[in-house]
Length: 194
Image 1: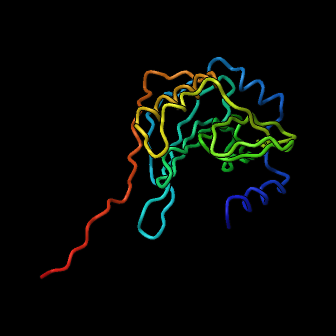
Image 2 (image 1 turned 30 degrees about the horizontal axis):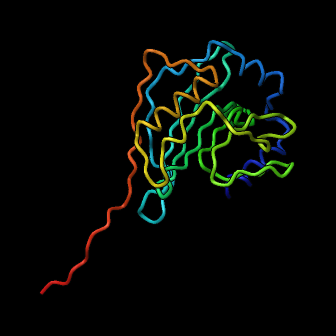
């Protein structure tokens, strides 16, 4: 079962707690949000024996004791595209998870009014009525420095830290950045044995 089907099934369950717009506003206005643990990347998807996607997730401590996390996702095939989110909720705690804020670097999106992003950076702010269907172009993320097909690990750190700052998330003393290891397959020259 794919992620979309799982979310649809969860949406029909009456016992899951759902975030309200008022609660989301309180969380986004909370000035005590802190990431206080190391960022570690891991392979989250494979095609046969080759890794295809890397993900990271760190807890965000807050005054309300809510389940918040900051997450990142990078496709190994297209590393200049990445996705970042400040998420709320945990299915294991009986909550219907949502991305309160989401940053999509160099990706596609279309708003309900027809506005489009084609391979361009955009942000989403969640609402209970529209979810993340509406996006806008950010001005505070260092995304133009990465050229098509070339990515420097420090760029991911700068993007993460800029996104955290925009979400009012402080980086605590235990925060440590660990660069994602982009496990690209290396091309080898095949030759015949004489």
